[in-house]
Image (tube, rainbow, N blue to C red; front, side, top):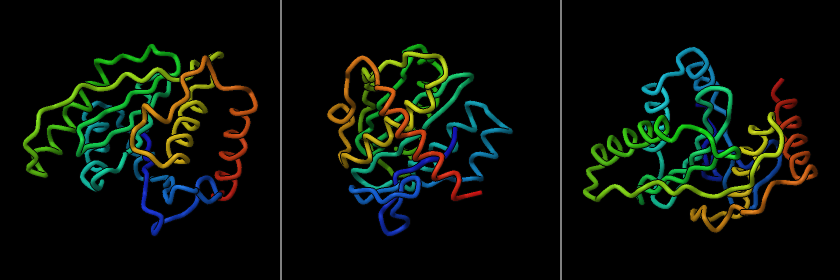
Length: 185
């Protein structure tokens, strides 16, 4: 997993170097990049996501891009509502692997926060389908951008369900990512 969280505007008000309208931002956590690269196990993924859930607030989404091997997908988790949105541009990632991690996270979160509610099922959100074989990371970034720009925690209302993103929409994300990374080198 690599750590991009939805944060309060008081911490950082930029997305790839640009202000966000919804008062939220992306934050790249380098310690998580290192951990994920060296120890890509379900337990490490669960621990990393759970630590983000524990820091989340009521009505806040935690955006967790993940790559279980060769393909990026996105989890958008509202831990208090026990809602997990799963966005996969190829619609092929193993749901068993993801389900184990999110079940463990929600169970730990509920226990630590002393929340006595029943577990909801994840929402398998139909999202724009990737046309090529190498664009999955850009699709995940675009999903996050769409969620944050619209400022709602109801992901089902935010993601366009059309066939795929246009080349222009993916190029926008590529340029924003290049600007962001260029500012950190």
